[in-house]
Each structure stands twice: as structure tokens, then as C-alpha cells.
Image (cartoon, rainbow over all chains, first blue to last red; front, side, top):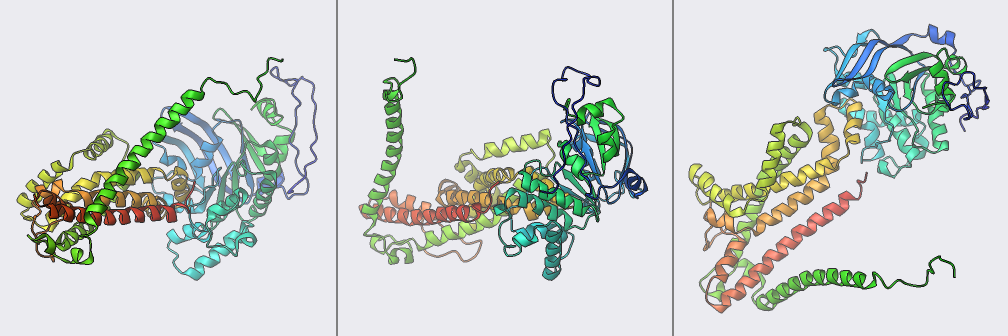
Length: 296
Length: 292
């Protein structure tokens, strides 16, 4: 197991309860100790990688996100939490402009990647997506060999030499902790891998492009606990080199892997801050209710 | 006794209707199989003595003993090769445009509706179009090229529809993953979507080419010859085809020619079955690797 958090259950009297759910036990996700989580001070000192300023997002006429402002620090894990439909996945997809594929979507405000506006008309989407990699909720290997899956990114970027590709594939698979399991069968179909392996393959595929930032939509939501633990360990290792943004339903997971957390509710960014603070001492009542499991 | 049902007692109700329905379905299947069997048996009985290597090697003749189907067989091979050459790039290209590029507009719906309707148009209509367009307007005369272009018109809607179906069966997650890795639309289609849909496209192509091989009506309209004592050597040569040769022989009064027709049909069936076998093989070999 990646971490065996000492779950401290806090049974609270209903003084803070806002609704009739007072009977449900309230479990505050615990913060694992000694796992290299960045403190609030370290977060404040970290370089700003992505800066979101007064951003609103529209699906045709419906506003899905309202006036979001958030700073994402370099080499940290930022987790977006919130109930289904709160806009956190939509927000994640704004960073690599995957929402452009949906007709009638519109963005107001700006998202700056190291000072450059992602939504500027001068932005080259292909380059942007090479710098900001994405791993989807459901692992979706291409119906090809393991090697072809990982080498797809570099190949379309113009790398043709077999040796160079092989080196990239090896490095990426090693970083995603899959190399030892697949090094003897790189030419086998990726669809023969297990669910957890497929997910790590998708991470390797994204890493092969050598991105700065890795977006992960519900990593491991469909995996068994052992595979989930591996993915979370991996996220911990990867954050030394990459800026990672994850979306998750799972409070425990957010508490385990993230340095910074942002809580979304109905298209609004309710609260954001260092994970240890947000989870132990939230400023807003809604955040408190959500992370202790009163709603959502 | 408790009110619970005893699992050993079978209820009478439903037993008879179950038997009846099974029998009806079985009989329906057997009727189809039997008819096919009788047809093939009849052909073999009639044609077996006439089917020989000489039969494939000889040109048509007034004398049944000397007649063969060399020119018809080669005509068909020419026709099918040319038709494949024209219709596959056009059909697959159109399908890729409609599925992957065309914006969802009223125009696309209209085009789609038209293609679906064209797939159901009787082939003789295409024959007349081919006569007017290729033979007369473009002055290609009664050449193997005119015939192939006409057959291309016949199979094009079918190839487009089959290819569209194959492209649609590729899940969107594949496209999204490719885009997220920085692929352009062209790279996504060329490296991921097309390879993934290839088995479906190949099957559609081979099945529609099999249909083209059996078509006689449009070729008669564009003027395929009944008596061609030579093999086409260039695109502008006159030609005949297997179905036309067979039609020609069955229309003659002499009994011997009917046997020749049966032998000709056997040759046509052998070619068709081999083409369908290739389709099954392709589907099986490449389709197995791809599952979603």
C-alpha cells in the first residue's frame, strides 16, 4: 500500500450541520504524515506555473464556470474536488483546450501558462497539448502494440529514428513504473494489459511527449485498491519533475496525494489552499460539509 | 403443501408455443439452406462435364464443344480491378470526410440521405447513366473503362456506407487521446482511426466488389459485347464479363449451351466464394486484435 493513513474519525455534534444529515458519521480525510507533502509556506514560495484569472466558461448559453481565479504552483500536485457536475472536469479540460472540440463552448478571462495566454489566437494547440499532457479517467490505449502506444506522441512530433524512439519509450515506461512488467513484450497489443497497467501505459504515453504539466481526470477511479496505490505512489514521484493537476471524487485520495486543493461547487471555486489547511481547517462551511461527507 | 412452486413440475403453459416457435425458425433456416443446396447441386450436375481447364482457356465459339470463357473471365478480372482502383479511394475518402471532417449541418444530412438512397437504386439505372455519361458524353466508347466506371457508380454508395459504419465504430476516446497527445486531425485519422477501422472497411469493400462481379444489367446497358474472341489489353478495348457470357448462353436454344452456362456459373461462384473467404479471413485476422 502506498500509504496507510491513520483515519481519525471526528464525530462532531450537530452544531455545524446545516441539514438533516446529522446522523451520518462525519469522517475527515486524514493527511498522511512524512510523505513529502508541500507545506503552505513551500506552496507560497513555489513558482507559479499556471495562473487563472477571472475565467468563466460557457457551454453555449449555460455558464459552467464562473469567475475562477487560481494559481497552480510548479512541481506540486493540485487537486480539484467537488460533487459531480460542479465543473471541475470542465475546468481541467480548459488547460489543454480539449473543450475546443465541443461545439459552442466559450471562454472568458485568461489562463496563463508561464505568462502566455492559453486562449490567445496565437496559441498553437498542438504545441500546447505537447506541453500539457492529459490522462483520461478511463484508460484508452490505442488498439496497437505497447511500443506504438508510447511512441505515438514523439512519432507525430517528427522523431523517426527507431533507436531514439526506443529510448523515449524505455524512459517513459520507467517513469510510469511499468517498464519491468512489459519490457519483454513491447510488441504485444496494449489491450492485453490489465486495467492498472493500461492506466500506467496512458501515463507513459503522456510522459513520452516530455510535458511540463500532467492533467489527470479521476486517476484510478476505476481501479482496484492495489492499482490505485501504485498510481498514487507514481503521482508522488512524478511531482518532483512535473506539475500535476488531478480531478478526484475521492476525498481520501485528494488528501493523500495533493499539495494544494481547490473545492468547486456549482461552477464556483468555493475555496482553495494548501491541502493540509483546507482539509484540517476549512474557511467555508460548504467546504467543511463536503470534505466531512455531509453532502456530495 | 406450501404455496411455493415445486421446481420439478413443468408448467404446461408455454411448452407448445415454445416448440412451435423453435420449429418455425428451424424450418425457415432449412428452406434457405435447401434452396441453395438444390441450386448448387443442379449446377454441378449440369456443368460438371463441361467444366475443365480447357473451358477456362478457350474463347467463346458457335460450337459448344469448342466454347470457353477466357475472354469473359479476363474481362471480369479487368473490370473488378479497375472498379476497385476507382471506388476504394473515392468511397473511403468520402466516408472519412463525412465522418471525421464534415460539420454537422443540414447539408451533411442531405448528402447522407442521398447516399443511402443511391445504395438502393437498381443497377440498370446506373447502366443508363454510364451509357449517357461515359460511353457518349465522354466518348469512352464501349470500352472496359466505361464498364468499370459504371460499376464504380454502382458500388460507391455501398462502400461509403460500409466505411462510415466502420469509422463510426471507432470510439471517440481514441480520437480524444490522440488529440490530447498533440496530434492534428489528419494525424489522428491517418494513424489511429483509419487503422482501427480497416477490418470493417475491407469487409465492406470486398463484399461490394463481389456484388459488382455479379452485375450484368449495367454492363449490358453500356454495351458489353456478347462475342469477344480476345482478352482486353488496354483500357479502351471492348470486353465481355462472366454474367454476360452466362446470360448469353442461357438465352440460346441448344441444350449444350445451357450446360456451358452452368459451368460458367460455377466459375463465377468459385471466384465469388474466394472473394468472400478473403473478407472473412481479413475480418478474423485483424478484427481479433481490436476490441473495445
